[in-house]
Image (cartoon, rainbow over all chains, first blue to last red; front, top):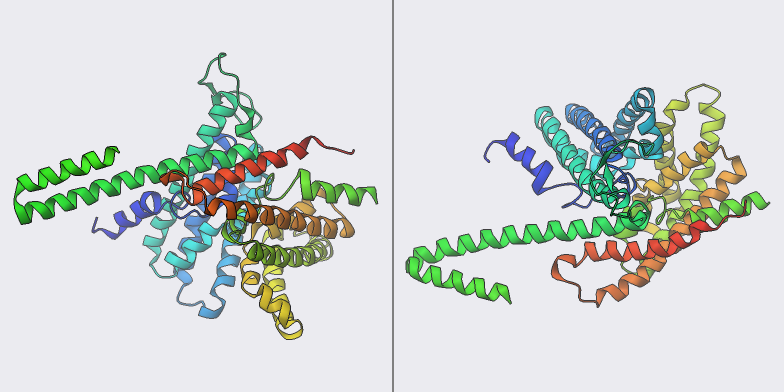
Length: 240
Length: 193
């Protein structure tokens, strides 16, 4: 993990996931996850804007005066958002209809401004592009997870098109769809549970790392036997 | 007149910005930890959103439309809002220092509040006139304030609750928000048209 490109990739998509870890960009996360197709459309739009704005801001980072940098970033970002909006309107009218004003609202998505301020303004163009792409992938992944749960429980199908047709029926006729998952209440509920699960997994991984460190430490100090005993004791304590 | 009433009713209850449109979730979750801060944020948003609805309407219909550059509305609106927030901040600091010190820290945050830009874009999308735009901006912001205040009350109770470890903090907040959204979904069946 000494390679800065690999490190940036991992941080953007997993360890510093914009949605699950940094809790940024909640509006589109909740609003556009009624179906997997919508979530992917939103995700790809954000990847495009984030990559280009990171690249551009990184290129001009030494020219922009410090005092007006935020305003300049917003203008640069809104330029790219307008471009993406026009492209989506022209080539994917169905996605444009279902995402509505959330495409232009990418301008005020905190993820993009946060990456511009925290990363692109301090790093070179190559790393900034990598950071943009992988933070975008992390965002898309999070959105897709939420949309998968919501669409599956809300309709019994996944990958339905924006107009509600087609898709893959995963839950058969025995399942009566819980429409609440398509409503705003379901969005909050799903995100709440997914965040709790993500945190549980994170805690487990941390605990495992911690125990490994402890064992190595004890091995060094007292020899393998004492360490095994301590680890066993830790196991029992954990079951309670 | 009835039209104005309908816009207000829809913006505050049936199409509440937080609970049905998902606009302004960041400040909703960020500054709702105390009723007093929630109220400060709500007032600042109300102020900016009403003025910005008027300003963006004027910019769109008097500048962008005659020049046929409507596609630049996102850039134009975000600039108008950022400038407006800056001006309001300067004006309040000079002439209403008491209000400035009350709203102070919330004002700069409003530029990136998607509710403000969202209201401006919705005004254009719905084809509202000037008066309707201002009413829509004002009542949407009032709906936002109401939601954030209600939630600040809920949050104070959550502070002393004891949820499972993984749910502590943000997840349990979202689940509480989900329950509040369910309550607001009850309004969605109401219609006067």
